[in-house]
Image 1 (cartoon, rainbow, N blue to C red):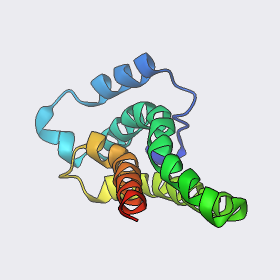
Image 2: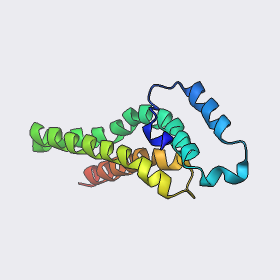
Image 3: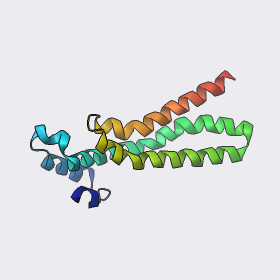
Length: 130
């Protein structure tokens, strides 16, 4: 209950790392501790969310090229859809990260960024093949 009611967003990176170290004295119990898992996910989110601007560049460039041909409205609509989808993936990270304890927290939190880079690469390749 404590982990779900605690606000992680106000913590600095150093404070979050100290909390992780305090919660993980026994390495054998680490995979089963939900509070520790939430702290690790929040720790990696502090790196993945700022890098999202670079991943949006990978997908925004091909969408911008397509919007030049199809019109400005299509680019705006697709941009809103992608931003909403990225936000939805970020909110789902907590639930997925708690259920898939075998995957590293860093991989789970960077998965939306990886998916956006792959989507941008596919869009760019399809644009240049035309």
